Image 1 (cartoon, rainbow, N blue to C red):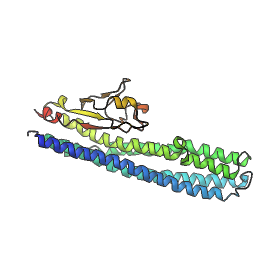
Image 2 (cartoon, rainbow, N blue to C red):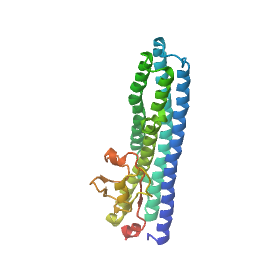
Image 3 (cartoon, rainbow, N blue to C red):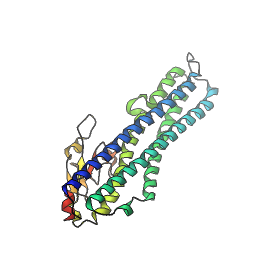
Image 4 (cartoon, one colour):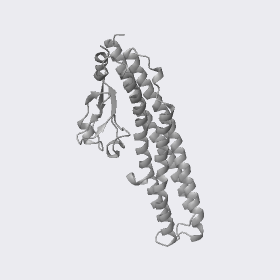
Length: 284
């Protein structure tokens, strides 16, 4: 079946819309996770407000109760965040699959049996859950340390409350809010890319000239915090079966490639597309 210019442009419009939808999904769930963190910050503040703020130290007798209640709040906060992110990843997975379907339709191929496996999707969402749970492993020793200092008289209950509030999300990169946002930004988009890539690789093998089907790195407009080396490869195109090449020699099959090093994948805001003009070449 010939790949007409009209089909190419239709493919381009639909896949760009799916990518934009996946990006919007990540932004939406980041906002919802931040709302969860802020609600639990408020509840933790209420726990600490039960201590007379004019005291020079937290009462030692209150420590077991405080630690138990704080741990419960943190666990509930992270469980709610996991639920939100996993729901978003399910949607991102379906959007990546839909993008693969658009590619199949443009090539005149049947792709319904190339749906990414349930096992792969389960592993991806489970990995994200583990990342979010790991926040507590870093957070709770610090929170307990603040409580201990409060008991020993080095911190007033008010100062302890302020320090814990910073740890929970008021301290920029030190806070839980930032850590959760970084995980959401990375993992929701990563799931979209994995779902799309699994289909692209299978579908390319069915094309007459699979080596001519190409993908393109899209860095987007520069803004503060974006990686300079990712900006340098904006627009780079390579065959779909080959990795993109970064200036430092790193090779990534797509932005946030799970096989890539963390310093090149975490918090990456780039995207990738199938080069529409390569579709006709791949089929003829």
